[in-house]
Length: 160
Image (cartoon, rainbow, N blue to C red; front, side, top):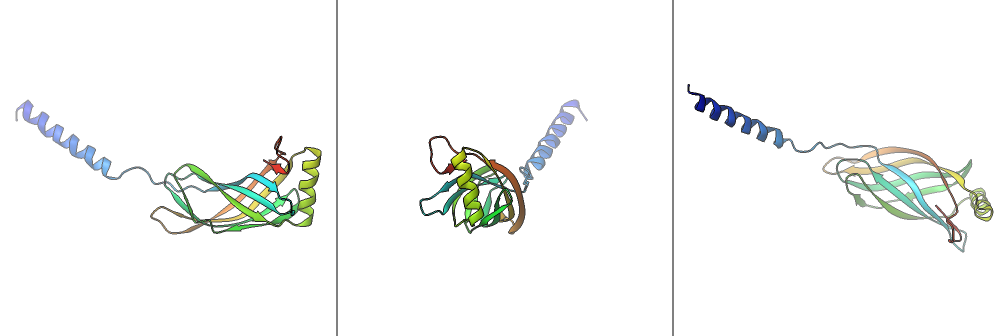
């Protein structure tokens, strides 16, 4: 065969190989989501409004179907954060869900003390996030997170 024919055959083979590689598309990675408190607001009636930040670390969107997390302040059980938000969060993104909570007495005292003294308070979340990755079946993810909340300057009753 002539050199020109070999170049055409080789070129056609490279084009077909490139098309075959493109067919598989981007990698679809499902990673454990996370949850953390973005803001906790003490209301006049003593109940709390908890802004919970849900983080999707996956390369595909996820539908967050159910939240069931135990909140503790230090060693004090504050209560159960439960909701069925039914929100979709895009790949490698986050969104906030606001939950109402009637906290236990010890947790109320811990937050009131931290706010009055201008101090931070440690918290932990432990439980489940139930989410459905795009075009897949629903999964339950275990969540365990520890962090701290501090009084927000100029915002009475708000911890961030």
